[in-house]
Amino acid sequence: MKRRQLIVCLAVLVVITGSCRNWLDELPLNTVTEDQAWQNGSDAEGAVAIAFAIFRRALAGLTKDDTPATTRNGAWGDHFFWGDARSGDWITPNNDGDWQASFENRLIQRTELEPLTNWRLFYRTIEQCNLALEELPAITENFSEERKTQLLAEARFLRAMAHFYAARVWGDIPINLTARNVEPLGREPLDAVMRMVVEEAATAAEGLPWQYEGPRKTVMSRGTKGAALVLKAHAHMWLEEYEDASAVLQQVIDSKVFRLVTVDEFRALFDTGDSDETIFHLYYDESKGEYSDYYGHIMTYYLSNPYTPRTNLTLAVPRQRILQIYPDYARDRSDKRVAAFFESVDFSVSGTELRPIHADPLQNGEREIMFAKFRKPKDLSYSRMDAPVPVFRYADVLLLKAEADARLNRIPEALANLNAVRQRAGLGTYDRIDQPLVIEEVLEERRRELIGEYYRVYDLVRLGRLHEFNPDISERDERIGAGFVPVSREAFANNPNMTQTEYWQFNQ
Image (cartoon, rainbow, N blue to C red; front, side, top):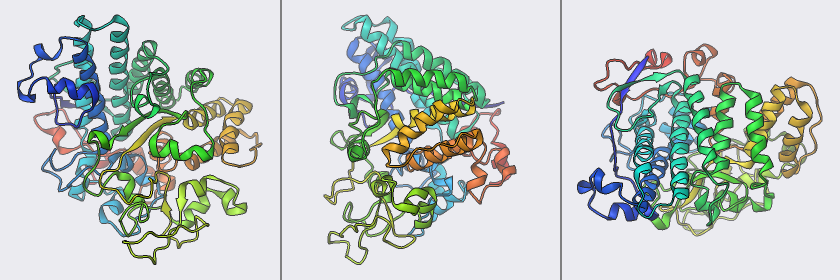
């Protein structure tokens, strides 16, 4: 078993918002003691808000301000590296060496990629949740029992979410459910982590509302009953507990809280997250100082003028791959998502002028089609972009349930949810009934619908199929852990029990 020392971190250097900001403003960071930090309802609100703020930073990624082992000048959006980059669908049109190394699974050969291997902020999130779960029950001042129950459930949800997210990235990871833990904790088997997530998410769901009051883009950055149930279902899928996953996802469907929005409503869904389809996302709010100030938000790597002043593309899906992923569009242009997710712009126009957008989203050459799913208003601002980073949305729920039902050979149920997503995209009904074909069609529909939303690598790794789509990973390599990210050298400090994932022991 692999063990790692976890460091208690009550307050970390994160950009924080709302009541969280007020909580830290009470006293300077270096003078806040635990006695002062857990006195009333405002402190409790701030403590949980801090945990969510740390988690947002964990997905954005470490910078050279966090660790001297990297030369990064800002957060790069590591959620893309982890969830999409190695899927085999992406290229780097401007031949960026770091992105190319990530595509080829060379994750420890460039210092700028070293932060990808570091789980520090996930465990700071977990530790903050542990502290909240320990301290909040004793708070009574200006703190109703109803709100206490909700905040405790939110902390439990986020603790489970942080474990879940880290497990998809690193595989076997430590489980930490105790505040102030300084014992070296071992990497538990992936199945044990997912079992814990199932149990924690189920408990959290009991104390959470389906919705909070306020704009959806804000409240869906918090834990809700829907988010906890979807988290639970995803963990069941990793455990191959398809009956349980299907039942949990049906609860989300039956709630009627969420819906598939129309293609015309995609801009609200992807630009702001203020949508009935959003279940859980991390919203980076420029007005509150949450942004990447180096190359801008991760979304800008996909974009060029007229959406940003950048004159080239760093990340894109090549034209032939788009046509492969969306065969209906290749055949008769019927898939509405291609025009919603991709754009061709006039690269002959200089970067200081607005480039016209072509009517045909795939008009440009093989390497010059812009991935525009997360495009922003054409104001040429990019250094402080705000945007949601999606985690769960309703289309994912329907397609995940379709997969679970197909694996249970409940083909009519699977087809109903599969076709709901297809029909929203303007496609005809899929009516094959052979179980293997239905399963494969559901997985391909997840690829089409959720492209660029940090799902694809996780789906492939969960199924042991990453090697089928990434030519730089063999079937043998995937069996010994090539689909997971190597563990940072930092985790080995003062920890004699830590060992590296098998594949990465031989690929230093």
